Image 1: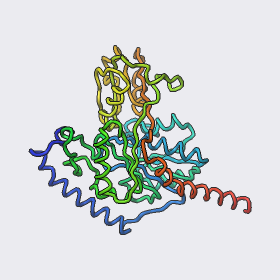
Image 2: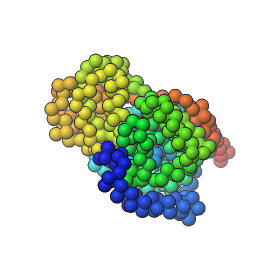
Image 3: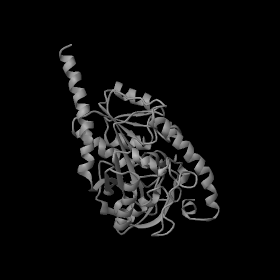
Image 4: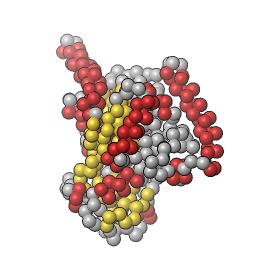
Length: 358
């Protein structure tokens, strides 16, 4: 379906009619929030939002991991707030992204709630000094001090280019994959390009110029997703070269499976079968039948669900761990965090001071 929508002309252009209607509704909604005709609620601790403008995976979780690590290193109690897509299907407290964060940071405060204001208040009650709002750009009811928008350099507006060198489709759903018109980028305080090493430098520079026209004055950083380890047991990581030269099969239920394939190939593995499932897919044992002859590689996001349905299978998947790598713009990005960090630290100091004199 992605490739069909990426094409110009033909029957898909009929979808521009409902897309125009949807875009109109989104512009009205934005007007209401921008002019405070719909309520925007501010909570007592700083909120930092990580989001995007397109459907599909842009690499939000590695950015959330980076921010949690960065803020915790400065002594702040961080809470992560998310809607929790896919959680109901698993019948658990956390969805797969949440479980992955919990594995990395066992004492991390997390709340997943469709009502983000209620979720933020819950995190504050648990002692959070600052909140990272995961996938929050379109959620306007909760005020945030900083809006970080991620743009995947390999498919910046959700759809791949029809052919190399051809323009991307820049349309909202259902004609394209945009969640809202690109003019919404003007309300971001930071734009972070992800997977920049998977695109030609001239393509990324052209994208940056396009984004500067859409969001004048908004700083733009370049990042990539760097593979850090392969593991079957997270306490026993192997170097990323461990499966180099071997034929491997992939299993993934993520927003951008093509980027996962590119990462595996870049590490020198030969790609066999790739079983691609929808984002937040609830795995069944039948989904994995016939695998195991080759090493099976999956993502950290998919691992908890795969592990739950493998049962007595004679094989274990290998997890490819990735983290955010800054190419350019890190200093400017982290300068944006300083007031956020200072505000949280001052609130904590004032609370301590009040307690000493209470």
